[in-house]
Amino acid sequence: DMGMRHFGPEPTPRSYNATAGACERGHAWRHALGLITEMRQRLLRPDTRGYGATMGACSAAREWRWVVELFMDARRRSVALDAGCVRITMDAMSEAGHSSEALQLYREHAPALATSRSTQRHA
Image (cartoon, rainbow, N blue to C red):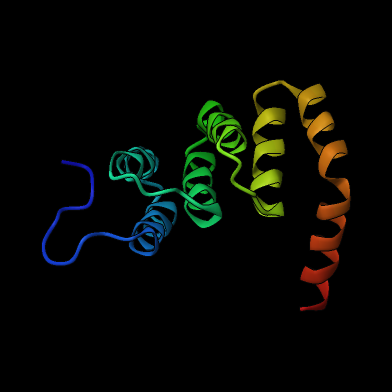
């Protein structure tokens, strides 16, 4: 069983996000994908952190297709992804040989990416 085992209180989006973050750090991309699926089965809504950590785990494993799939899934579900998720997706598209799609994504999100980069420099 790859999901979160139920011992005690019901898992929450926060506990899933923490587990997905550990998956990202441990490059356990398959497990992170399973967590997103399990959240949906429990009628919990994955958020930016959950998607971001899962996308990061997939990116670290060079699983470009899954990064893009997760990005598109989040869009379909109206999850507002942060600039980091957009950057990971642009990188994945480029690595997968889809530079024109990466450029289009950049054009759509350029203001947010510029603001994010500026904020990171001054932090």
